[in-house]
Image 1 (tube, rainbow, N blue to C red):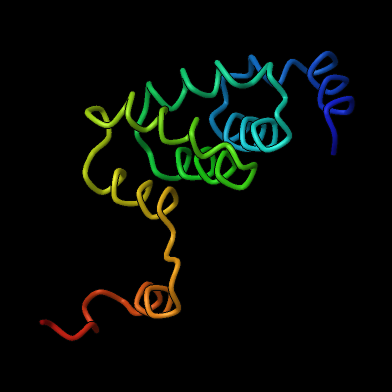
Image 2: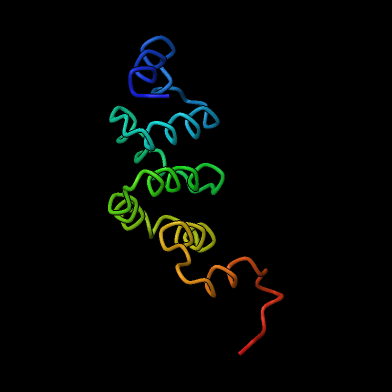
Length: 117
C-alpha cells in the first residue's frame, strides 16, 4: 500500500468520508501510518467524538508506528478529558511503551498476578 493507491481507492470509493466505524478504523489507521494527509483531520475529529477502545487504539498505534509520537501525544492531550480512565490507560500504554527488559517483562504479567509491594 502506498499513497498513490490510497488516493485511487479514496477517489473511487470515498473511504475517507465513509460513516461505517469498521471502515474508518482500518482506513484511518492505514492512512495515518502512510501519512496520507486526507485522513489526518477526519481521524482526529473521529477519535474526538467517541471513546471506544476498539476504534481509538488502532489510530494511536498507527501514529506511534509511523513515528508521529508528538502528534499522538497532542491528540491525546486534546481529548484527555473526554476519554474514560480505561481508554486513557490503554492510550498511555501505546504512547509510553516499556523500555527496559524488566518493564517489558512486568507488562506481560497480568496485574492480578503481580506481587504487591
